[in-house]
Length: 106
Picture 1: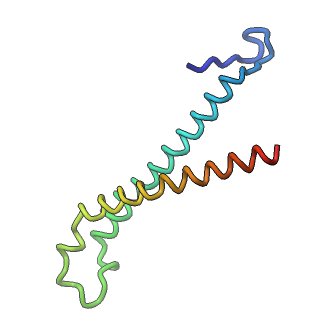
Picture 2: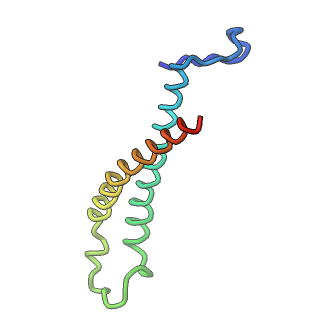
Picture 3: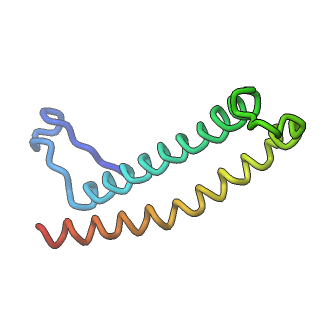
């Protein structure tokens, strides 16, 4: 529930209540989290699966006979999921530190 008032629409000057400000901050953080997950999915699908698995430039000398290993899409998807799970607590910790520092500085 977000109640956003616009200047001139309600005559109140566009003020936000504290609950709306908190809701806006939470929505902003959710959007940022979504954007980072989209970047990780792009990395897994486009860079790893479509480019790395199919470009001969990435095949190391002496491993030309391991084409099945290079085309193992499941490995790239699993590794991407592990990266997302590892990154989430790290992001939460960094966000907590930023919030604490911003409250100290204010």
